[in-house]
Amino acid sequence: MSDDAGFQESMPEELKLDNQLCFPLYAASRLVTRLYKDRLEPLGITYPQYIVLMILWEEAPCPVKTISRRAILNTNTLTPLLKRLEQQGYISRQRDGQDERQVMVHLTLAGRALRDRCACVPWELLQSSGVSLEKLVALREMLNEVLPDLKQTLEGN
Amino acid sequence: MSDDAGFQESMPEELKLDNQLCFPLYAASRLVTRLYKDRLEPLGITYPQYIVLMILWEEAPCPVKTISRRAILNTNTLTPLLKRLEQQGYISRQRDGQDERQVMVHLTLAGRALRDRCACVPWELLQSSGVSLEKLVALREMLNEVLPDLKQTLEGN
DNA sequence: GCAAATTATGTCGCGCACGATATAATCGAG
DNA sequence: CTCGATTATATCGTGCGCGACATAATTTGC
Image (cartoon, rainbow over all chains, first blue to last red; front, side, top):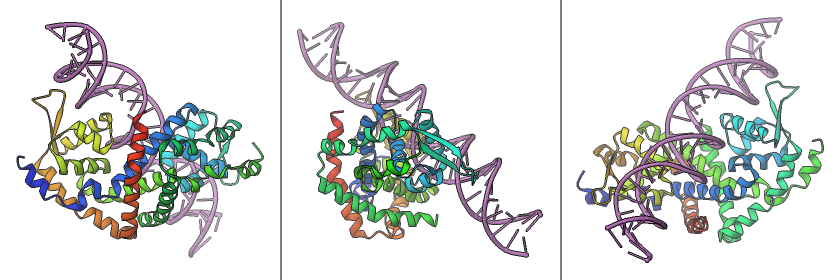
């Protein structure tokens, strides 16, 4: 319990917070979520709900499965989230006639209208963040390069 | 409710999931957390607990405030997390004699021993992820460049 | 000195995330 | 046709994250 200095001198470089990829990734993700929160709260939605809405704006009506695949979120996360969006009046959910297992998610008029109110958010956040557009694009491309590898690694469970 | 095609044709490019920075960041962060989970579960710790332990391996004993600043986590997240680490026997917490407001967090012998068991984890994950070391380093540097900007933007609340 | 402001930690409530498991509908092999 | 496997969704429990608020100790201004 006493020789902290000796213990810390032997700290492996690869375990130092600043040498890790995992920590800046985790930190940056949470900070960006916080940035969005301020803009989304007035609209009554959370950040994960915003992600789901972006998917719906592109492909609604669609089954829960499609949202799950694109957002990389399981149904145990999506089901309650979608119920909250339904209660807010942004979506409606109904079992598919063809395949009764599927729940089709539809946008309501209010849900569509929300898109226009969100259109300025990404741009405004970029402006206020002080991050240059070049850095953002480079970062996005690098993340999109790595994502398939990560997905594949996790597929074999 | 019916003209989905027309609605989706008018989808602003900047709101499409693939054109966002926020989504790949959010997705990559969660995927990496999942990767770690498999390795950390046998040790009885979660990913956020691992982050906190990395900080402690570098600077224990230290007050909660220090962990909060480095991990960018508030005390309402840290207090229960630290209590769980204490229950597992990896840390001990005691009020500081000088400043009774502060709680000093110490590593136990088990907490120190855990470091050696974690030393191989980042390297092993890099191997299995299929991501090249070059990409990882480039991504890490880019994230570390952006992080200060994000932190500063959020400081003014 | 001492009241007001600040600081460090803690509690509460809500909404994710996710592993494990359940249930019901559909599919597929024999 | 039917029974076992697969698929889509949902439920449950645990542990974050974080805003809002509470509490107690320290500091600061006058």
